[in-house]
Amino acid sequence: MAIPLLICDDSAMSRKMVKRSLPPEWDVEVTMAGNGIEGLEAIRSGKGEVVFLDLTMPELDGYGVLESIKTESLKCLVIVISADIQPEAQERVLGLGALAFIKKPINSDKLKTTLKEYGLLD
Amino acid sequence: MTELAQLSEDQRDCLQELVNVAMGQAGDSLARFLEVFVHLSVPRIKLVASDEVLPEMIQLIGNIDVSAVRQGFYSTSQQVRGEAIVVFSKTSFDELAEIMAYEPDEVNEQSEQELLLDITNILNGACLSGLAEQLGYELNYSPPSLIGTELNVGRLFDKEQLSWSQALLIEINYRLDNESFKCNLLMLMPGESIEVIKQSVDEFLEDL
Image 1 (tube, chains in turn green, red):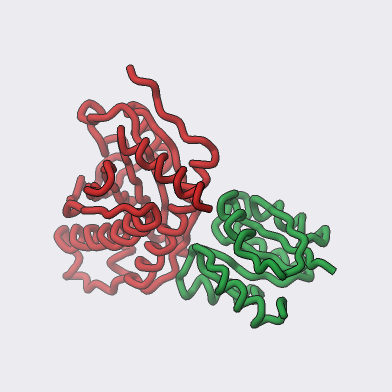
Image 2 (cartoon, rainbow over the protein chains, first blue to last red; image 1 turned 60 degrees about the vertical axis):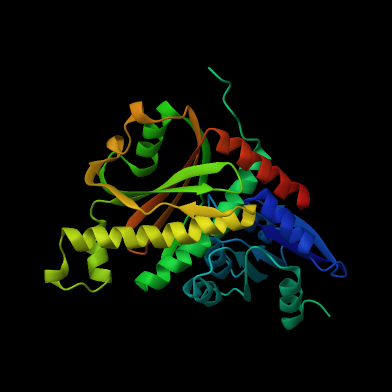
């Protein structure tokens, strides 16, 4: 069964780069969202069992999405993919319940290692 | 009157994401320097005509008094040039002096100016080089110079002295948690630089 994967990023180019970095053998059904509000809607409707989440976004940013996931007890695994490389940004998102942090620009090897590390990929 | 250049949505989006990565690197450098967490927001990318620059800046920053530092940059490998202006809102220095643990007797006009130049160097160094690296440019910089302190945003430029009719404006802002400190980094790349950057962005998109 394909895993519902949500890519939530305000940049179309960035969403494309993330999608292209996915391991080809990973069986996923990809949904795209252009801001945090669209992202949350997708998660609520079951389209994001795994979520790749950007932090700086208009409407609702990644921190806001993580907070809502927590308050609404939504079931999903979030990997933050962001250009905000401050150590404290990583601590904050992990504190808000994100599983892992990957810095932009995304690297497909790093993504694969992270997915394996958390048992999302064999 | 030459026809004004335009950015396609793909070009704007790509440039915004490249700036986003560079902004993150600069934000990290600033956070390490000040030892605080720095909030980032979505960068803004726009083509502006020379008579739109000041109204645009007032809209982005507010019609307030600021301190500002300018630094020129150019690439010898590509026909790209421009200037980066870091705008500090007027109250920022007192907060900065506190964050940097300055003693009261160290807070004076000279230390203020030095700190503004230091921060400009940190932000420009990381942000411009980060953007240049992604586009494959080698950049040279002129030393930063103070435009002024307690200067109204509307007086950052003398409109009559602008030598170009249109420029690419990139705006990013950095603020601290309690809003105690805020600065905007504005990059203006005029005239022919616009076409060179558009070309580079198209090549970047083609390689994806």
